[in-house]
Image 1: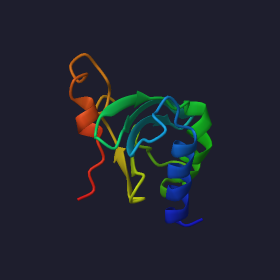
Image 2: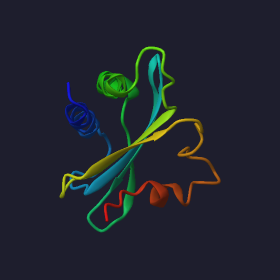
Image 3: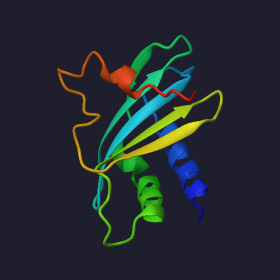
Image 4: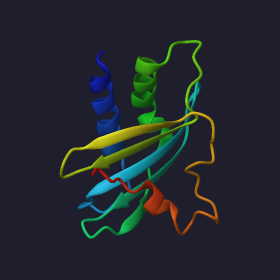
Length: 127
């Protein structure tokens, strides 16, 4: 399977399993904590047409098959996996980006220190 196909499959799975977002969301950002055993956690933020961020949800088990397929297209059995994936998608344009975080499992973590800024950090920007 081509990398573009697995990326589209990943984006589709994220969109299909997005919960608690407004129906008219315009873009989204999802952080997936990953390991060889699968997706261990997920943080989802939807953005409406006015740019307001809204906490959303995704069940790790629901997106796990698409994430495994995606990672398998990039990494072999003995390769080190990234610790997180940031999936960003703009609904109107169809543009997307998937970013790997190879080492820092706290890069996109929601904490008291990042509570007021994380939504802007993760906001999709396709200039």
